Length: 102
Image (tube, rainbow, N blue to C red):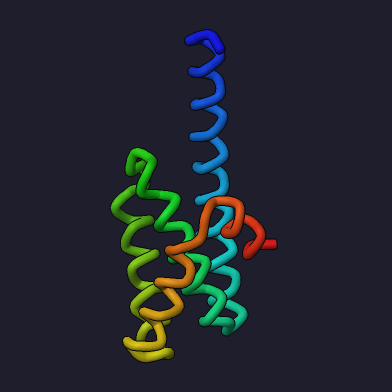
């Protein structure tokens, strides 16, 4: 494979991660609004895992909204249960996270 082809493959991979992360975060918010806290925290955990490999493009306001959502979920579920769900979501591969969001 040529260098140019490798760059295209890497770019497509990053775009997939970016769009998947945004989708997961959006669906996590929907799950939270539907009072499905378990699903929301798994989705947020999966999104955070995918987000680690990307440049941090969230604005401070977006980060605060996410942190507020997570604090609300933690208060509802309790620290231990919240952390177990977060860990489940965080451990997912990109493909597993996308399936979780379907």
